[in-house]
Amino acid sequence: MPYYLDKARESEHMKAKVYVTLKPGVLDPQGKAIHHSVELLGFSGIADVRQGKYFEIALDASLPEAEAREATLRIAREVLSNPVIEDYRVEIEAAN
Image (cartoon, rainbow, N blue to C red):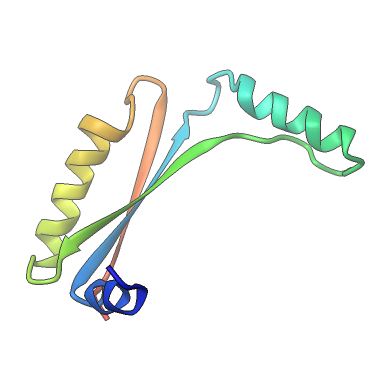
């Protein structure tokens, strides 16, 4: 699909943004490796690095925002995160 048509279709959708992060106290070896690499590259003043995941979900614009939020929260809880070791946050962006 041409880019301009794809962009036009985006306006027909709400966007759900889901941020998944490790809970405080959960070890983050990938974050530690990134922190080490950043130091090797000469960056200073970095106290810690924690990695996470970010998802964008296109939702039908006709869906009521409360229903969109509830569905996205359920997806985040049941599919996108491991609630034992991860927290998640959901943001809903209205259609343009």
